[in-house]
Length: 266
Image (cartoon, rainbow, N blue to C red; front, side, top):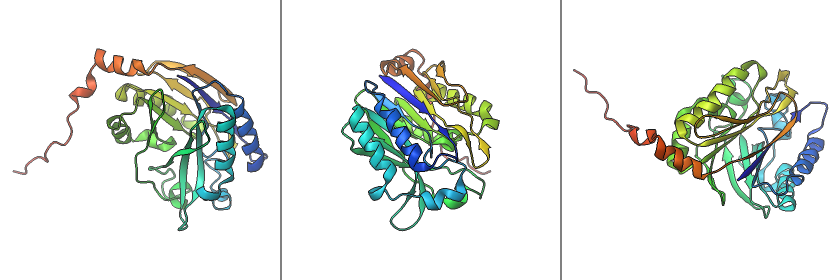
């Protein structure tokens, strides 16, 4: 399974429509990949919260979804198109990841569950998703999560229970917390015994320098590839059979103890 991560730069000097066209061209250049991944909120910028409302897109009339569907179809690839600011028909905004099949069909729309900002920015302006999402790619089951979700391992336990073999995580992670990004991506791979494909943005938006450093980590926690801080493309071959082999060799997941009764008060 060949995965390509497009770590694109988000620069406020580039208009969203221009970046959309550029991203579509990058996707079209990845014919032959089994999975292409873009970062979180790349059309507007994960920290450009002042622009969220103006750039919000309804799914049934989304210029980003239309451009990405066409690009996936032209390249013949499965495309995790990162996320957009979605405007629901009832009004709320969501941070929504979109996954397209090689025929351009939308197969998943995951609304980010954990919103970052501590009552500011995304946390104040967007609603929380409430559903875990997986995608049955021909090579592996993909589990979907987004950026700040990375800090909440219970979500990844649910994805493992849903059969995930490859966890796909678009992000707009700040450079000042790069060390957290690197250790948490590896931790999610080790504890879940899955691959983690984590694609971040480069550049600066909302006054926040982005970390870049997209990562692909295997089920043992080994870093297979890591980008630098600037715009970059990573291509890595994954072996989904290694997930089952790792779990058989080191069967830690079978020792999970869940649903214990609450301790009795004395």
